View (tube, rainbow, N blue to C red):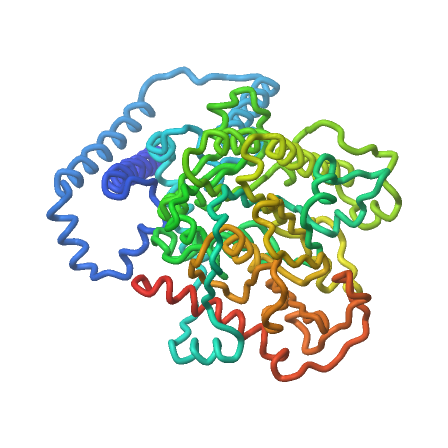
Length: 560
């Protein structure tokens, strides 16, 4: 009898929860046109009396409660009836019992993987259809609420920097703003590629025998490449927001995830008549990039969209192979009727590594490589070479096209190859370095200055593109400068990463109070010889981060 009553109450409670969340899901989608997300917790910052009066006025509150009571009673009585029914007990042999249970567990595991067979379904990869309404409505509302609750506990906060502090920081460091010079040859197409794990700690093993660049190698020889270059973050999401939004926080993990952000790095192009598209071989639901970008009026094309155009594309754990992203990029540029800016994010060079064609031979992997990269050595480097070569093929195709003189291509890595060991004595900055590649047609190469050993980082990419392509346009510089112009301010000649920064004198880990000299002026590797810091360098990292927070606060003024 106890079991009968307990199970009936339990089933009634579960039914109640399911129906409640179904109601919430329906009306939440009606209002916000999205699944249950972080925004649902914003009601905690509102007057609860006001919220209740809105619910009472605009929603069928009492009829809903009445329906819930009826459904709960029905489930309670139904369970009681089933338990009292004279069903004959089903007796299974032990082996059959084990088999049936294993079968059910297997089906449950398959169901957990959802539409993605490589990893369990989660908030980063639940999308399966081109129509967002279907993705959001199909999602289990309790699961969506759980994801939102988890995200609310991990919210990143923006430190407040006053206007007075901001002015002091600009006097100490540099102005936030800059303006491009007059440029008669302006408005080329632009392709900016943030490449997964495109890093120097792997690239240093590139050789004639072990070609890790593939078709990209010839373009490295023909065009502009900076290798004393730091990524801004040390995993994909931070670098993505630093580069494409000048944000030191992951905005989709903050209360600003639905904010229309002003003064984005893409905005100077938009104001000059550019169409802006975000293109990725991954899934737009990863860190809610898609929803956030659309809030910035940027069109989003992801793996699900690409599968519509390339139905035979090979799927990966995070989307599809990069080559299809490049096919689409080429078609978009070819068909563009006005200046087009594509900001891209590749994913193929990410574990679990997809099966791709053989780019390198196992026989050419030395003991030093295995020592540095003991885990998934071949798969890691073969995918690294594949990703680079496919990007190289895209550039070759562009250079053979009739719009080769009307496009600028920029590419960099999002972070180091993380499975590679770091030498803490010699690689305090080198371990976090990535290449920066730049293709600039001859027509835009006016009065250029090129120093391949110039120190730089992600902050310099968009200022370089502005100066090459836009005429007399104001922009947020944040210490960035045109890498193809002669140095004009020594304070801007630095590279910055979340854990280390560097200038012409040396390398400065943020965890240290000392600086370290370079091995030579062509590398980011350091000696173990330390030196004391002057006042400017001692305070620089904290001041620069505060300046980053200040400018983001200015752009979010109405939402803080």
